Amino acid sequence: MKNIFVLVTILGHLPVILSAKRKGSDNMKHILIVEDDNLLNKTLTYNLELDGYTITSVLNARTAAESLKTNIFDLVLLDINLPDGNGYDLCRLIKPEHPDTVVIFLTANDQESNQIRGYEAGAVDYITKPFSISALQRKIKAMFAMSSIVYAAEKKEIAVSVDCPENLIISHDSKWTSEALFNLLDNAVKYTPSGGKISVSVVQWEMYVEVKVTDTGKGISESNQAAIFRRFYREEEVHDQQGVGIGLYLAREIVTRQGGYIKVVSELRQGSEFSIMLPVR
Image (tube, rainbow, N blue to C red):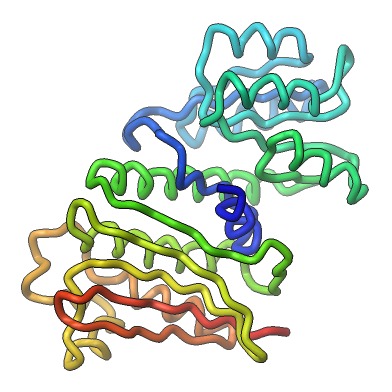
């Protein structure tokens, strides 16, 4: 499922674990911070606890390894240069025993070779210091929001697949583009029946990069396809589903403000295709 992480990297380095068997989205998330800079360690702990996460913070690799023996973590924020080892080796220890645990490196090592080494060790993101604490908080929130979609898809036994080139890079607002993609995926899971399929594909055209979300859901009549992008619009037959009818409106606003557009192809009872078209700059 390597391309899943590539897709996430393109859309803002958000580690969306589409293949992982995650716990229910209502469970409090447990984060392990492995950082030998005491001030940064305390700052991360303070801010992430304010966000409602359970935090275990350690200053070295040995204590981190001990914590991993007795706890299951949703996320590990991992420094590379530790006083008693390095983060690469610790990451390689984590992945075989805890394949669903997401690892993000936080490091001053900004060389490309180090980044490649980090991804090869099993991390899904590599953040260089100094970095914005608030930006990291947004990434983590987005990651866990996406995990709720994964959980909902698993409950309905919906198969999710991703087809994405590994060498594709686009310029965009990662925070807001990820929000738009979240809204499309959330709708796809919500309106696809149990046992259905959702596919995500990324294609580079001459002037745009297309991120397409295809589902085998209820479909949308041609007469309603323009209306679904209106704020607070909801079709009569979906009022039993949670929501206020703002997700597609926001997705279109987000993409339009970046010089792109969203298109939809759909038929009743034949599923839908939503495409985010982002300009190549």
